[in-house]
Amino acid sequence: MGKLQLFEISFDPSQPVFIAGSVVRGTVKLELKDTLKMRGVRITCFGRAHVHWSEVENVGHRGGRQRVETVDHTAEEEYFQFRTQLWPDEQSSEDANNSLGAGQYTFPFEFQLPSDLPPSFEGAFGYIRYWIKATIDEPWKFDHHTKRAFSVIPCMDINQYPGIGMPIEYRGELRTGCCCVPSGRYKGSLSTTRKGFVPGSEIGFNSEIENLTGSTCWAEITLKMHITYQAEGKFKQEKKVISSLCKEQIPRGKNYVWKDRIQVPPLPPSHLKGCKLIDCKYILQIDFEDEIVIGTLPLVTRASARKSANAGRHDSIVAGMPGKGALITVEGNPSYEECSLFSKVSIKDKDDTEHTFGELVFTPLYAFYSNKSSKPRIASNTQ
Image 1: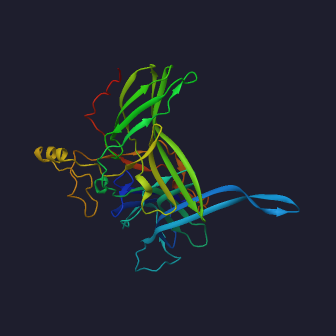
Image 2: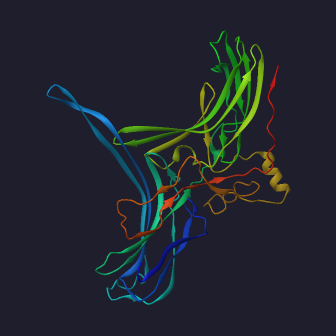
Image 3: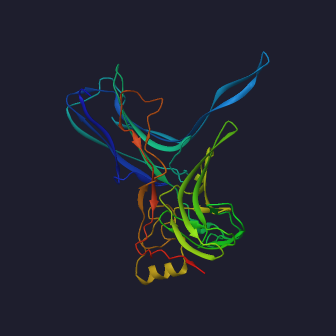
């Protein structure tokens, strides 16, 4: 890098996770081996959604033959773009004769996020991404850039959804599997603890299966993520299996009671509110499908509120969330963890060059509420 020895962005706190509506703070650090002429140092902050996919489509006929070609579908949505001069200050002019001598420099920055931002998201055909790019503007030379992404989490309170504490209930025919052709019927029921969850909480369920066939069978319950991308009036679907539980060797002619639970891993909240290009919902499937809601603020019961009051603690999960701080009380705050469904992605884009440095690989972080008092799984039994 020649005269430039260090050029990086750091955040305060060090874990780059911010609540929509909060203030983002950090510093740009610069180390020079020798005097460097520059017009100035600036940062630009971006919030953007982008979707893209290609499809082979029929585009008509020519000479009696059907014509097909690959068509790209692309759309973008910008949430904000802020630009701030770090050095010299805003009152000074950007002069080509400006220079910084050898040494280390730290330039602080801060800006406020809009309160209605969708969560960070990285999918196969699109993303919702937030990042900062710092630039050293050198006269008559290529500019130096450093870049770093950060995660944004909105305030999605599942307590605001009517009926969210009610269970999902189903009774009827179930589709199960067996090692040979079935010779009877499968009937069953399923009920869950409730419909709304946060990452870290557990989806408890109670199922009773009547195996009225002549064979041993098995049953499976699956939590899935369904993603829909939209561009130019077209839609693209993506489905991911989050977690799956399978119960094997259900004896023939027996009633089988299956009690178990699925822990919700770190995930973005349902529907990515605020984004018009990408939608995400969560489906619980056993033969029927029903949607559950995943938010960022957990369900609060009278018992949990009483427990917090009796303990003399009011640890708010939403500390720092504008207008929310005193409304929700639970024990402890969430940690922020990567979603295992998303692999690390490169955040380099068409505007970046070989002179762009920084942390160019990124995975979004999401709130995760650990339950230290989790009880062991309840065993199934056959009647």
